[in-house]
Image 1 (tube, rainbow, N blue to C red):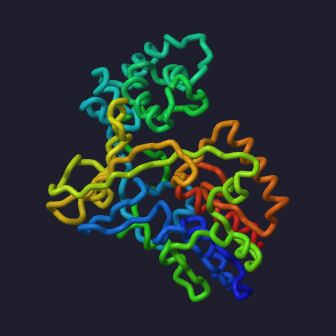
Image 2: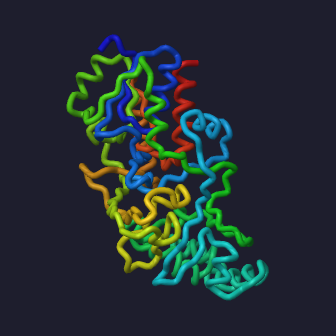
Image 3: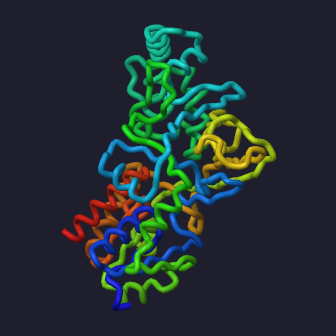
Length: 372
């Protein structure tokens, strides 16, 4: 393997960005991917003319102009604006919390009426220091919105009661005193026309990059580390070290995708189910990411179920509480001593809840450190 300068483990956004930039600098790169496809969790697959997000809804949004311009090199983006709707026991509310939400919830019409109602409901926490997520949410937004739009969804997402979750999980809540359903405040957002997979395919389409899918790094870990001068590892950092210092926590997800013989199932790309009784957190109707494109009499929906993570499950995001962050820091220090030819990157390698733009920014920062 001496003809290669780098082995990149994982063909998601971080690995693909690093491989692309390395090839741009004349480096030979081998990319291996455990799954049978490229693009990691942003993988999209066309069904009935609809780009189906195989691992949950991915809406690209950023205020980082450099990253926005960068990703435009690999795909043309539409003007999709994330405007999810919450279903609480059949009653529909707009998200994020805005004047449409408050009007539906309380019948208020003006921003001042909404402020007065929120302040009235926050009074039950007056003078108290929030000790858990429930108390923190009530101190920020009041009980009505907490009970209907936060409690059930959050408990499903984390697999724990809100009274058992730390307050710091909700440091602030998005509250808009305008009739604006745009979930993000970022300057740029959209969905790539034709899906996300093309972005990674174009990044890896170089004569200097060889790609193999269906290859598990851990099947030949020692051999890879001996044969390649440098390794970029985007998997779980604790797994890389065989959990020697302990096991970091992750949350997993299960997806249930179904094709329906109807043109429009729910009228929105994302509907959150915020009651405790519905077992899934949301239903995604994929065709609405591209404004209803695709088969006129078929639609594809995905129900998303949060799940506890155990070894062997797919880890989707880290649980960044103090205990886990301290353990990750120990792994970072350990890596600096024990794995000097390994670069750890991405959500799992850097144990951070990155959005897509943050993954690209982190990869580009790593490239700068490596080559400059």
